[in-house]
Structures are given as structure tokens and as C-alpha cells.
Length: 311
Image 1 (cartoon, one colour):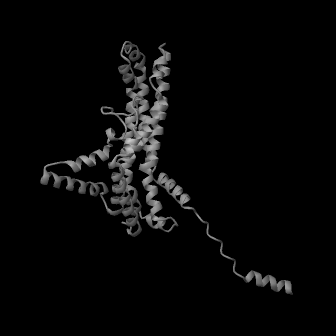
Image 2 (tube, rainbow, N blue to C red):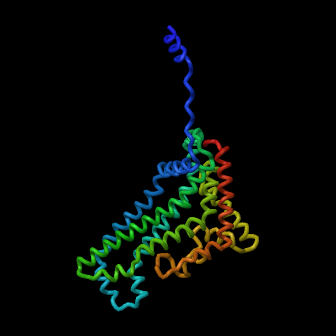
Image 3 (spheres, rainbow, N blue to C red):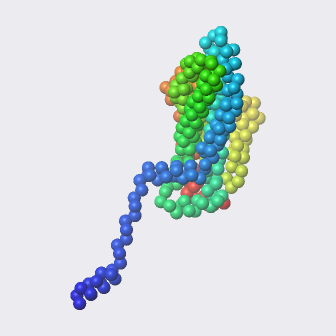
């Protein structure tokens, strides 16, 4: 009898609630970044697609490479290197350009998109802070895309080198000059440095401004982002007949290569003769002023996301 009553009494007692799983801020940030990559596949599909098209074109042009290499004999070392490295510089420049384009469109849509499709209501129900979400979104143009485009550029250049070697060996031309003129590892480090500085840290206020406007605008994010810049530049031109503000924004947008890492006249910083100057870059006042402005814009974006309703 006692055994039966104890069984009934124990079964009637409510089960103790399970303790909620504790997720560290780093785990929340990591999965938030993973979410951005899942939802925005163009971040990596666009560079991969452009790289594939470029490699197809290079494969077709490699049939003319043996005749080109024979015609380069007798040139001085500088012009010889420039002639060989030109397609590799173009590949690196193309990846830089596609990285800028993807960053602009991603930042302009990142907060606006979740308000437009009302998915923000679901994500706000999760135990992830607005600060974590905004920082994970900002990490795409500041960290993920520079690493991605640099890795794709390195893979492109290696495949191009293999294609060129096969074309030359098939025609009985030596490949030693080709390999000696293209130190891919050094070129990859130079490109990663340039992309991280000139196309991530230097234009940080531009990308942060786009993220802020993306959290505020109800439509036409890029238009609303550009209008204040045009208005300020136009007011300056009317009042003082100067274009300093427009030039400042333009240098931030395309990357101030001379003050960052490369010598004047170098369009693509993959030449192994170019020496990066990180200390000069880190001591540039414009860098820290731009980063401070980027922090302010991102802080305002966090506050906007906290109180902004879906569209």
C-alpha cells in the first residue's frame, strides 16, 4: 500500500524545469555570421561566378601564350615582368572590384531586407542581442569578404599559372621564366594586405553609413544614402566653389591607395617590388577618424534595429 501511494504521489509532482542552455557571446556571434552567409549566398557566389568566367576567358587566350612568350625575349626585366604579370594583376583587380560591389549591395540591404520580409520578428524572438546581429553583419564587408576575395584571387592565379604552364609545355617553351616572375605566395599576401586596408578599414565609414541607412529607410536605401552626400557636396560647391567633401568621400569609396600601401602609379598592388607600409597606414589620422565615425554609425544602427518596426 505504501509503495503504491508513494508512486502516485511522485507521479503527481511536477517535473523540475530544465535549465536553459547558456550560449556564450562568441557562439552567438559565430552563428549570426553563419546565418548571414546562409541568407546572402551572393557574398560568395558572385566572386566565384566572376572568377569562373574570367578563367574561361583566360583558358581561351592561353593558346596564344607561347607566341607571346617568344616575343618577349630581349625585353628588359621590368617590362618582361609587367608583360607576364598583367593578366594576374587584372584578375586581382577584378576580385577587388567585385568585393567592393558586393560589399555595397550587401550593406545597403542587410537591415532593410529583414524588415522588408518581416523576418526581424523571428530573429528578435531569439536570445541574440542587437549588438551581436549588427556586428555580425558588419563583419561581412570588414572581414569575410576581404579574406574571401583574397583566397579566390590566389586560387585564380594558381589555376592561371597551371594553364599557362600546360600551354607552354605543349609548345616546347620553357616555363622557368614564367614561374620565376610570379611569386604567388608573396602576391597573395600583398593583395590580402591591400584589400584589408584599402578596401575594408579605409572605407569603413562608407559601409557603416550604408548599414545605418539600411536600418532606417523604408525603400530605396542607396538613394537615401547618396542624397545627403550629394546635398552637402552641392552646398559646398555653391557656397565655396570647392569639392573637398566629394573628393573625401570618393577617396574613402575607392580606397586611398597612395596613403595606404602602394607606390604612386601602381594600379594593382600585387607587384612583388611594392613594399607595404603598415606603420604609415596605422599612423594616418584619417584612418582613426574614419573608424571612429564607423563606430558611431554602427552604434546608431544597433539602436535603430532595437526600436525599428518591420516595413
